[in-house]
Length: 381
Image 1 (tube, helix red, strand yellow):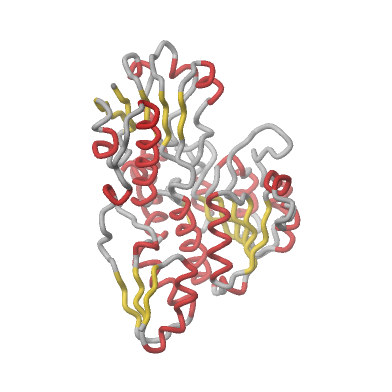
Image 2 (cartoon, one colour):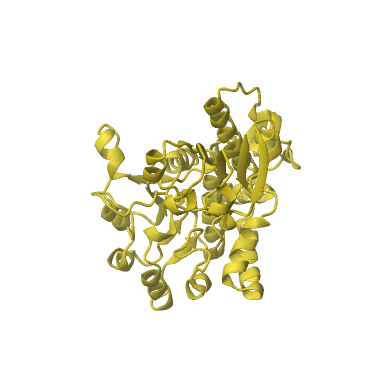
């Protein structure tokens, strides 16, 4: 079997080498010519898989090692009887790590406490549900908005987006991109809703760039300048709006889910799906491809203020400021398109909070519930 695979997919040999011959191609460069003799295509989110790409190809299986599927024309795949697999939830924990790191960084910069704020979560799927669980365990109030889930889960308490805008200090978007239908998310945060955000509000988008009207957000930030924004996803990636990049508090290049653990989990999930497709049993486990972390444990012996303790442990694993600085530097020196893509292609090693065991003793034992709630492994004595 011949497999064409995005060159940035990790553990490709370990996951797919036993299933066929691999041809690695950068994701944005994959074209129809590469697929002329291919049996399977393995991609990430930057490859647009559509009729043009698939024309005259013998491909019978397509897998995306990502949560999102809006880069896949599933109608075209169905018409060609191509088996499709994605990796829902593979990097959800990493995205939640990103959100918590971002919010605690802003809280430190601007002098407020996360545990005194109300966080509105728009989109309560793999990421949003995990974010709510961790925030609740940390003692942070949340409100939820997810109209499709509200219809299918009437017992759960949901609110309208307008209610979240009115009642929440922080608004986190974790929706897929849908352009049609009663619950379309394209420009969900339009000019009117951006104008309605209360002074002091924080808007964080780690879902899809087109869910926010970028021009309207830039206008609010450049004009009143009374809200903060954290953007990991953008309209027109990789040619993002430089003016908006310079106005947001944290600007990162679509890397919220880019932990090593999340990437490896995505590779492993697609390997399992491809093995099922070809009827070949797989003995590969996630532990087989996931290396131990460089920093396995951290020992706290004295009590710290709650959010200082959180920042200390989070930054031992992941510091969002690194990614903000990298985007600024790379796009300034190499241009927007190349700089944005270089940040993603050469992303440094990053692990998830759960890989760090925080050992607590003495007065620090009082932090156990908070740190465990934030996603760390915790032991105390």
